[in-house]
Image (cartoon, rainbow, N blue to C red; front, side, top):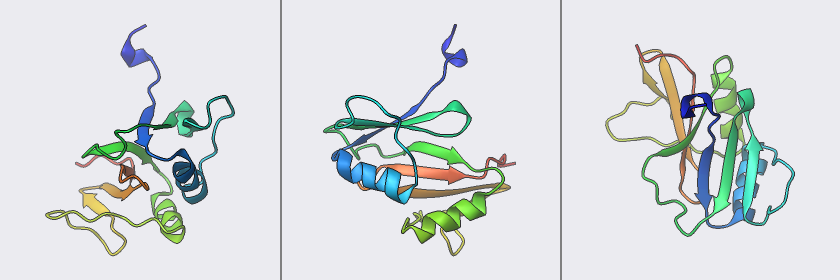
Length: 131
């Protein structure tokens, strides 16, 4: 087996697992996997056998780039609207045009970035190729 054959998971550092759980579970609607150590880490099953791991770290929120990204191929606009309805605000970046909701377009590729309570940048894209 090589790494290209092995599953990978996104891992996000947070300062407060309770606040993180409120966001990832309450706001984003993810459900934690059962298990030990839930006071320091949460693991959320996502689509196609992937996982998001959220864990307590003193380095939470220090990444300057996107730390995790979801792809919503068929219902991108619905997911954007549902997230907005739960209070998620989408980021706007200088030099990148965005629509009224904060969705950026790169050819057919659309993406919206948002932040968790620690300032970690997360993204949702439509799965289309930019070309």
